[in-house]
Image (cartoon, rainbow, N blue to C red; front, side, top):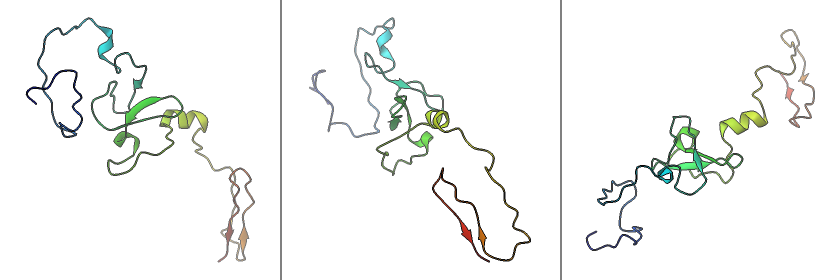
Length: 130
């Protein structure tokens, strides 16, 4: 890397995941633009506690546009990032988790075919025959 000018892009020169040490002068510790991507308006809020881009693979929620680690979101490094991604917070605000079954049916003593009622909210019916 000797002889590179500081304006040059490092694409193709450094392998992904490698460490890079930079020397220089003029570090401005008072500048607010060091975090959250500089002048860009993006936010990292991961369930692991990360609040800034740490170099790990990330995905953005298509609703709140908040970035989080793919692995923390259940997407393995070997998997492709889905075209549409909704984070847990947005998902639960759109459709709260249902912790109780919406209907019950007692079929312990029934010997014939069992037809559960049609559920239009999920467009599904269930037929069970012993």
